[in-house]
Length: 253
Image (cartoon, rainbow, N blue to C red; front, top):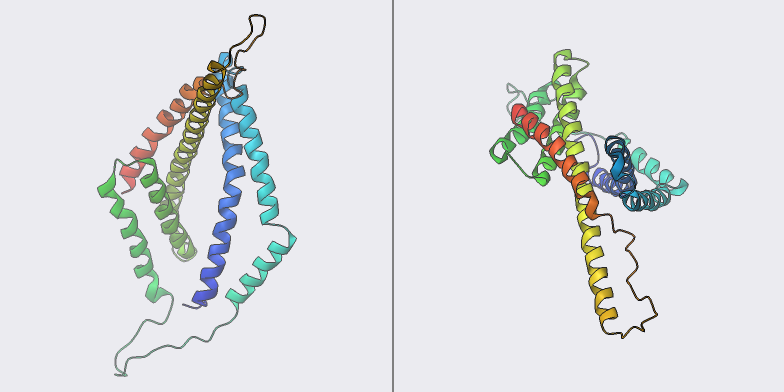
């Protein structure tokens, strides 16, 4: 490689940490947009989904604060320094065969087919795992991204690769939407479990207290009380995106 492997690995790990931090705010923002579209089509559910909307906004705010802290001025400077270190000119030693009559790969075009086919074979291997669950499709999406990036590196010299890269990009978007919907479903399920646990705890506490006749000891409604109403909202997400993603994934592999 023309880059220092250790410095490159360190930089990629740092960028991956930033990506994970940014994803919390990004995912919440996407879910708020999807929730808004759902409420437009189901006006009667808007009031019941208000607590879910509030929790998503709070999650987005917390994620944005964490992202701002992760990419502050000092962090950006460290990333720039790391990039300069990786891009620093490196002396590459070519190992020629002992027999001068034999040739060894030296130029970029000598490695093009190897890199493209290696990425394609990784993507093609998912054919044995389809139909797949959301986690497998998410890994398939990563394989599509890696193949697309490899193809795009050579599209200036090979314009015929552009339609393939564009199709891979469309597939990425659709499976990305499916992943967003799964994130929403997981959040709703977690909030539902938390609500049930809170209700069970409150019921246990109030059952051990002998309330006075004039005292209202009813349990206050949970701020996530409408999460159960949002189950159909999450199911609509899953149904809409999974069919398209499965169909395109099968076509691409």
